[in-house]
Image (cartoon, each protein chain N blue to C red):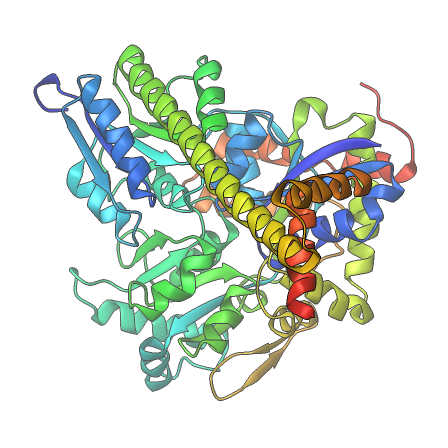
Length: 344
Length: 194
């Protein structure tokens, strides 16, 4: 048994990694997969960069940012497995939900929400701009917010304030009025609804359908060794298991355990099933593809979407398209799944 | 960095640890040290303080909030980089092992930064050691109380002398391949049931 250590942040989309470690998929590949729960993406990156982790659950844009050395030590990373697509939502405070309803932006889809948000943000003073939270500067959440704000005619740099709040603190920030809304992954939007402090305005798919979210990130220099191929196979098998609706109850209970997400299983299961409760009145929104866990193969089209989003946000230069593509290693995935080790 | 004096902000939810780091930095000749609470308005406070170096516990979720300082030029005018320079991996490794991280404003001399990070690492390690020793002492005391209680139960219920009661506990522990305190706890639990 080879021991591999992987870091993760407690979110529903760590499901594939957690299932691989705890439902026998890693073991079946001869791996002792040890998981370490982390509190920040910065820790995930640093511990991967300095060799404390062999692999990590990582925001796809952070894997790109780390490879390019944006704001930090550069280490080329490879993403040989996609851990999920989607799973995000935009949640707003109850006062903002009321204001959106007045402007016809609640329950009417993307365009109506964006337009209403634009009207509300423009009416705010410069001193107290509309404040929205994202999970990390380099995250799909940031880019989804940019897309939404842009559609409402807002400049995300000047017309609103976007701040970083760690996912477990999002609900509290909303409750205390530090932010008017946020974009975050599952299950934190549902926690805000259940706590009675927020209304889900839009599911991620209503902004960008099946946007890239988390990947398995590994240092590129050892991405093609036999252990990583075994890990890729273990994760692909775990992903297929996670995607079977009959397994969701077991998976939700596992994720909800105190050592992982420490949240009620029923709440976690709603995010796995894509059957979300969006407000305190119990209004439901169902999207079976809300969170897709079994899109394991890293597709070049996803890398291109990431490049475009990061380019639009001014996070990467025009010249980096190929570098972004190079992070998404469908070749490693294909080779591992074919059972043939890749040689240089 | 006013008049060449480096200022450091220490962000730590553990106030005792923050105080120990502050004291260490002052002792190392850095007069401008501020402890900043790990609260939701962290970024605003740091912007107001404008420190040259931010020392933050690795286990703080607010590290991601600090990462924003790289991107949000509108909030912080000065560029910030993590740790020292790329080549100084030994310092970074030591820092990660100790559970501390540092953000440094660009343009500071590497030697000065390294001295600050080294001091923070040393103090973090010292604090961890102290905590460990304290925990061990507490556990030892609790174990001792459990064993004394079990010994007392054996003495009153089986009419044994103190020495015999202890010998019985030790023999049972050896036979069962368990720790003395585990046997003692089992006796106390059993006695509570009867």
